[in-house]
Image 1 (cartoon, rainbow, N blue to C red):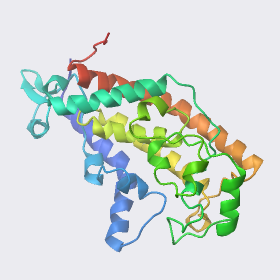
Image 2: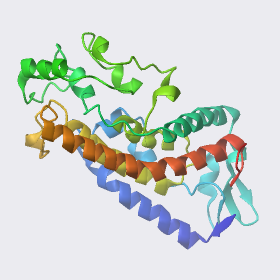
Image 3: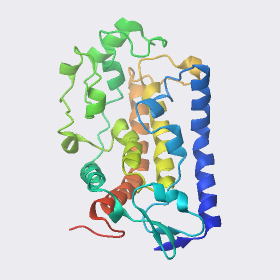
Length: 291
């Protein structure tokens, strides 16, 4: 167990809030003005972690907070010790541990697979195939007919259930598989942009066990991945300052695959850290190696 003096953990707490305020502040301002952002709002709408919760700091397991740390006792898993207030995963309720068990299985299974890089972000195209655009205020770069032609010309290889479930009915049979929630552990693979973005979701699903520095790392990566996701989509985002990745061309597909591989590599150590956190929650201890 490590002991952090109050000056140390207060500084970490402030640094975390300042770090994520780059996104939470503008999001709040847009909401106040009644404005939307088709790229960045996704991080606060599809993902259910509210800005105030993203700004909240937790040290993670095995750290005793010296000084006036009574504020943390409102959260499950925290307890007083002679050294200070400590987050102990053994103090979490059984339901939280069971949820962490799924996260652990999913992340381990994903980490054990090689990245697949041949989807080219076509899930966003399949979500508008022969239907109205989901983002109705954004024009389609190739128009409706041109968008449909791309879907019909290229294979759909989506492996992520939470993307596949938004495919239009005519697009669903075109996918090489039909991912389901039940089969997610067997299908998730680290090349998938949505699997990488979802590392942020698993961070807050494991809260307050996840150190907030790891939450912020995963959130920042999710922001970058979301930008690529939409730049490779059929929408014209030039008015928002986003250059298209034209996956309807060989050069665009190559650019997408390179970025996809880079994101998979950056996600790997974050996934490994999350696996450790999930194992601590499941087994109720710090630095435990499950058999």
